[in-house]
Figure (cartoon, rainbow, N blue to C red):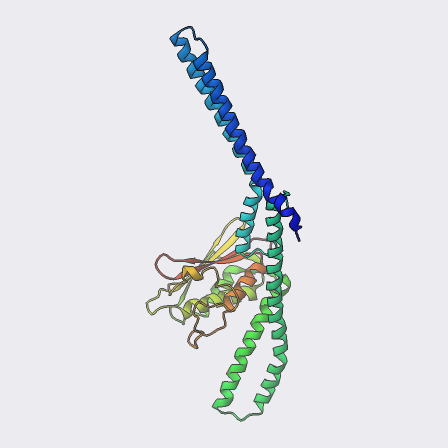
Length: 345
């Protein structure tokens, strides 16, 4: 923690530097103007032409010196405010979810105090998020045992509507627990089993499962796209996106489009729907666990808000990314980016 007795000195440092720059600029300008008027007013110029020439020359010299002073002051100010720009960049990166950021301490003034405070804040946020995630994992593990006992006890009940409802509720809880544990495994590459697989074939096979479900699915992709991926996990990502697109489609929605484009260093897959779309205010949060645009959590839409969170974890575990782009009219596009690696075929 910073020494309170050092704060007054720290707060005077940058202020003193800025005042010094202003005083130096003011004194330089006063000195130049004084010299200029002393030469122009008191010196005896031989002729009007020579006097005019001298005036122009002195004016140009004065302007050059002023510009030089301004440029030097600007460079000095940029150097002094560099820690502030680093802090601004750090805040932006933190807002984008980069929790391992640490800013270097490059000065000994109040900017250094701000940098230390920012680094402590990032560490505290990281600890809080880690504690939250660990709590979810611990609770999920602990829920597995009572769920198993409930399933065994359920088998002893007679087959009636109440038993069916209980079985459905237990199955729903199991899906929730499995989703939470899956997200934790995907925090690193531990949850992946990668191999050389044809992404184009995975796209077509996944879309085929939804062909008979309105509004249907269309695939546009090269014949083959070989990548080092976990095909089962990528299939889960595509299924989640297609289920969401179908769930929020409209009666007159066009078929969902899956388009894959292969670049030199990456493969980009777009899943575009013509449904209700994603509000701009929600676009940055839909990949958070348990977050849903539909706050009612009704039986019609179902789910716990883990699907897109799992999609994000799968893509990040592959070294790729997922993002959402809102359409100008309606609907949305989910963009999957896979980084190319040499497949072990």
